[in-house]
Length: 124
Image (cartoon, rainbow, N blue to C red):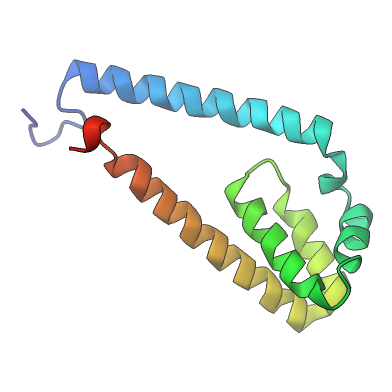
């Protein structure tokens, strides 16, 4: 039974939470290493610029989608995306596209976190 001042209801729930946290940390480190090895251009502003420009008139949509992924997949460096947005679209348009991507990505991350934290095995 939960008591005021206690974070976990039992020792078992504490262990489970710590194991899940450790698994998430290991997964994020592994994902970071994998992204840096497989897609090294994601940390190169010139490469991102060239990739986004390749979409032509759909470049803003491609940039927003990449920004959403950047929010959801932490190993993609956000500062690079901010530099690219200003260079590609100008200060105000770049700011707008960047903020749209950040807001959509943050909303998706929040909804994903709620779904994960409220999920119960067996659907109950």
